[in-house]
Amino acid sequence: MTSGTSWAIRTAAVFAALATSAVSAACAGGPAGSTGSAKKGKPAAEPSAKPSPARPQGPPGATPRPGEVGRIPKTADGLPPVVSSIPTTRKVVFLTIDDGWEQDPGFLAQVRDRRVPITAFVTRDAVEARGATDPTAQGGRFLGAGKWGYMRDLRDAGSPIENHTLTHPNLVTLGYEGQRAEICGASTVIRKQTGRAPTLLRPPFGNQNSLTRRAAKSCGIDALLLWTATVQPGGKIAYQVPDKRLRPGDVLLLHFRPNLSKDFRVLVNKIERRGFELGNLEAYLKTALR
Image (cartoon, rainbow, N blue to C red):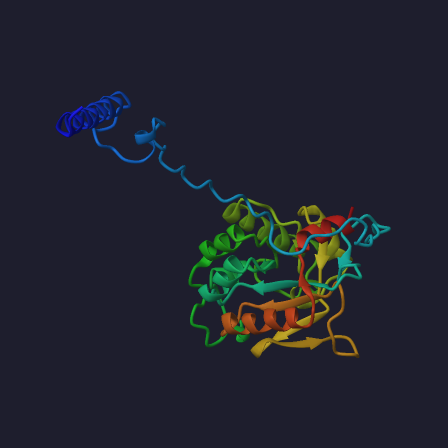
């Protein structure tokens, strides 16, 4: 066979292979000359799947371990107990915040974005900025700014909205009906505005008596929650114990005050540096009151 004949045969073979490839590509639904998996006779790659939605994260904060939490005994009179701390030896503390005057968006962002567990005890007059301003909120930039919308945002960030009365009176100066009006009235407003009735009451100034507990029970309250330490401007912790330190199960009290965003950041970092976790109060109380 001459070299010219050999060259012609090779050329014809190349054109035949190209034609076969084009037909295969057309049968596969792709354009002639397509590259990738269709070139090798495999189906074309499917478009990448959309990312699956994020899974629900559950309530923020540490939750009880099996057998960790001691029991808060039922009261002899069947009325809601008065609780100041959670019976646990785990290094966990609980953050609570009162009133509702200074509605700082920076505080809300921290609670939401860092998933900080906090329980809000709100007063209608503070949230709605009615009447005389609480002296502790004077100078606030966000006084009642979001009203109930702000509290709903806190709720959506995982913070239960609990009862701190309608007008923040000293309850022990009122009779039973007066106390009941304050407590039940606040529960009604909170349920209407947030979709959930409170189960906890923080009596203003921590003052309460048997009439308070009777009235609270009639309003659907399970427990009165006090505190073991308060948080002052600058994130400073004011202890109510002689050794001036955090203890497992402590309940800390903050207020919706000016500079809340900055003070809250300082406080959370301080607690974590001391080796404490921030606990989910709702989950711990449910276990302790079982």
